[in-house]
Image (cartoon, rainbow over all chains, first blue to last red; front, top):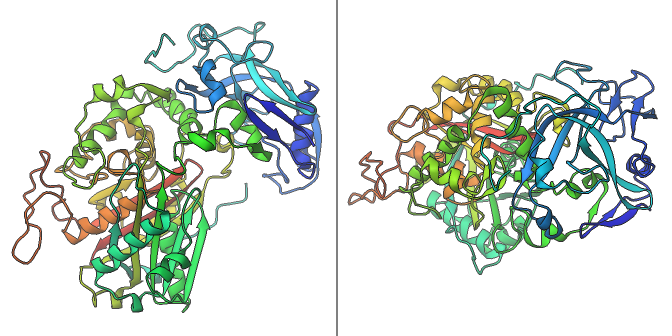
Length: 176
Length: 416
């Protein structure tokens, strides 16, 4: 059973939860995969038990490039979980994957959540938080939690062309 | 997605049911009471308000996703023999949904009169904001996609939706802060409100940042309280003490295409009200222009704004203009949350906004105005603070109940 301790939280995926076991298992291999419907061919996120577009229950785990653009974010200044407090402010990013963006309809995308992280998967320091906003180009990294369990995270894509001024909330707070 | 289903069927129920009684406890932080004692207190107050004896109540429903006491315990304490009860899981999208289910239970012949209550120690027991024991709970299964990112309280969950609205439409922090400003003005005329102080836009923007774009004062208060409403058939409703509030239409637990990770289906600032509007307006037989006052769920300043937009009170993207225009202020065209709502009066998962609208439709809102020798309010319509909060000629109200972008409920009532 994939489990681990992460920032004071006990994380557990039950063996019977096959979709999540496989999803986080691929993450543990640092090899991002999503379910691809064997009928209509669409990828889906988060893991689920059927295709939301054609109801087919069959799927294949498919490698997906972990690159995309920040669609929106939240920036936590008053952390709730005790072990996040020393890391505040931290960012929660919703990233549009390049893969399948705008499909099957204009406003849909595979929007994969994760924190803004350093390249080694740790929560980003304030000087990095300041640089990221809507439009920033990101690449996926992983935070290893336990055997068969790693969490997708996002870091700035060093190889990509970044927007000059990614959109950020207009009011600064504590210098961020 | 499968094609949308037309849910605008039961027009034969329009105007056939009513709320005949409302009741609540005080709104406190530290009740020193069980949710059982609080629930009993609120239901007793609602029965007294209606003037209905316990022997004429035979249905009870409640909901909870934190602390509560089941209906049969409250009923037993009050000597109410139930022909029907149901306690369901859920938060702020439940209030109107359960009123709709109560109508269904009565229509099915299962009972005659239903109390819907919500009892919670949202401050002293299970903190609504997610602090305390909830922040240390183990995380399993689908929650591993969210909680390990420090992303699990309501404010944290909703923040990307709010942020994207600002990006897409140019909505400003100053505009949204006006929701709190106006609700605080309303609360200053409400003796029950936990926070009665009037605030300014600067007060909101200078309060500490919780999670961008939410300052402390963009977030609702956490309180301990119970609330209750009593639903019965319209033809029975006039047998009781107060003018009934007639229910024109109700929609409940309407979802976006996904309720988990609803961000997959943009625009992500669209809330469930976008789908509810196609049910509630045809069923009620009225439209936004007919509504005299609204109760738009204000867990956060932003939530009121997003709902008002998606139900059609203004165009999508113009919510910032709507909430900062003053239209929602007492004395103006369409006041919102005249009790002060969750931001100021107390947090009840939406119930207090229904109670407020029932009293508004009666013309009997419980403000600081004097009463005559028959104990009826003599409203002054002076909204300056410590005074009146009655909406003149309140004939049709709407509750826009909501917990999160992915699901919502709604109700339109008229003066009986």
